[in-house]
Image (cartoon, rainbow, N blue to C red; front, side, top):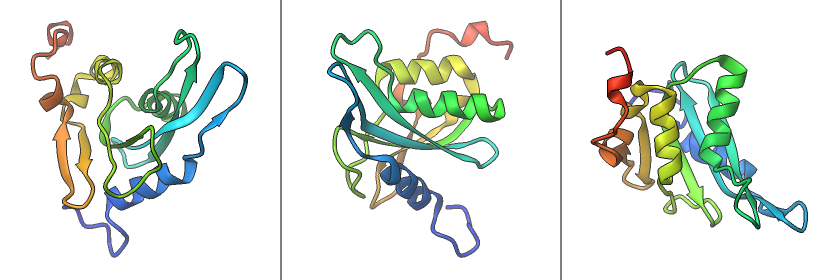
Length: 147
């Protein structure tokens, strides 16, 4: 585990930032927001948060993970995520983390092949992680990158 000079470890900081934005609400008769929240650590250490946007028809849905990544890119131009914590359809609790859906996994791999090394917290107490590469080991698009 990395040394954060006396501060809480990075997973604690990501948890705290995600918890701050969790507040599910219906913003119109058709759209719900903030049922899923996440926080990610970008390549150079900045933390970005995101929340879900869900419509009754399903057409305009956007996951928390993608809203955080879009914010990261629009604010900094960064495409590489070091760490990600997600809370899906329940209040953030230290034992209730989740993993990105298939669409988000695909999005992160398409954003940068280096996101294959992204760490995703799957158990808060033990700090157990899984990488994106572990979740999609035979991703179809690597041949399109110049590696």
